[in-house]
Image (cartoon, rainbow, N blue to C red; front, side, top):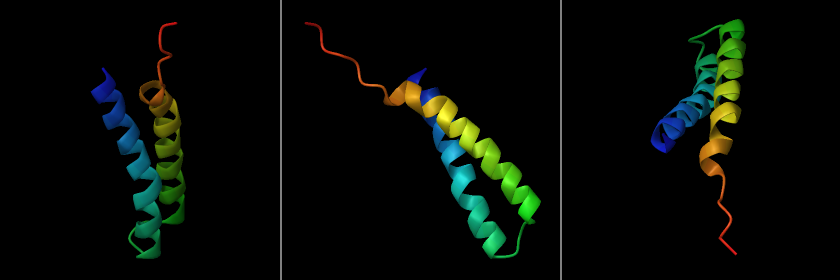
Length: 59
């Protein structure tokens, strides 16, 4: 489960980085960039906290 969450969150991270370069290179339109960035942000913030949580040691 943790591996799946990591894959989803890194895909989201990729969707927040790659579209910026594609717009800069003139490959995609600004509206497509905005939509991809929104999806990437939701994926990242929706999945990353669950695998990045630290467990408390037993006292």
